[in-house]
Image 1 (cartoon, rainbow, N blue to C red):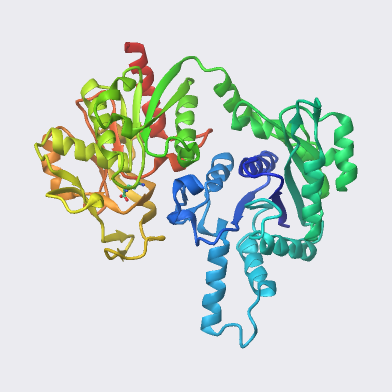
Image 2: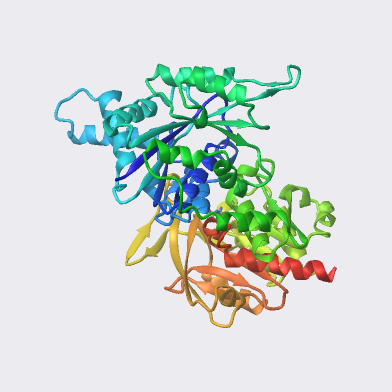
Length: 543
Ligand code: GLN
């Protein structure tokens, strides 16, 4: 029997609903249940792919090529269950599907309305292909009380009735702030938030209360009394030093036990949290520290690089070191002045990105890493910058550039309008739609034996990694770049698209066209991040 847990949020945004949902998923998994996590986003974009990272943070790409909310990254990292395009839906997608059906005549003359047509479509998204899971956790984006979330709340209210309490549960995440002048934790915002939920017909069975200190028994009883929940179902979601300690903290507060109790499932045995204890122990007691400069464009909004930051932490876990991140806006290098900032780094990572702004600085950072023999990792745009740097400074192609920034004499990086996906050919037109049209999702790469990268992948010759880009390193410059010492250690199976570059004349210099950070897990660090941090550890010992 599949059970559904709906997770809503109240009072303010950014309370960590994604990590809360992921942590509950991890706890249920640790008790032997299979889980599926889904996120419903109330905004009108069809997906977050066209949104600025400043608006939305990172776009998380699934194997099947969907551009999704970054919370799906937390779900995958915490549970190891690969997300799919069915695990994230927005108002925009739901409306466009309903309107397409209306145009097709599928509603047989009915007046198409929010209730029941939109709510039915939302319910379909929630239930689709979930029968084989023990638990489906559905996170509703936004904050209760927002106009946009109403159809989602109505849909889960209906589902709650249809499934019945034995198969559905509502968990509400709220804030219990500490007011220093009163010296007290305040429960009123939680009471109001639950009232908002009750207004739309939803009675939560559990409250997850974000707070910076334990909730005294009195306050807990007060919340329970006013909000109609059992005192044991008022769970303190305390601040912790690492997100990987959240599942353990929730367990200590009794969350999983209470969820199982709601569903009448035994909660006494079979919990295995050893994996989480090991990760937290590794994060809390490192044997050293390395400093990594992350050179990018959106460095004042760290949500834009969520998976990247996590993957670097995982690289640290693999090497039992703390990874100190120095986020550097690439524009600071544009006049050559600030390069000294990279001097005390043990590794330099040039991150993914779009558009010309800041690229001169990124190229300077690549040059610094190459010339000073500092471990270098270029991801997607970062690899493209490494190729442009080599073309300009080693191959003598002064005008080498990417056509992303306009026409140029030597397009070492160019627009991709046609590529193979399995046996199919994908085609794009210049000036076509921007949404969902990049090379997206898992694509294979063939690795050259004997290279650093194939060794890091454990001798593999065929890998699959996730992509999200419109431009590609132009294979017609391959030989020229090879003469400069660059090795193309990974290519698309048809040999047309360079996937990985490296430099054997350097301690650790790797660029990848894909996003390895999307597949890294705390309990299964990605080999390239583990290798990069290992190289940084070696570098730290040398300086
Ligand atoms: N802007 C580059 C492209 O579209 C790189 C994208 C990225 O770094 N994800 O190819």
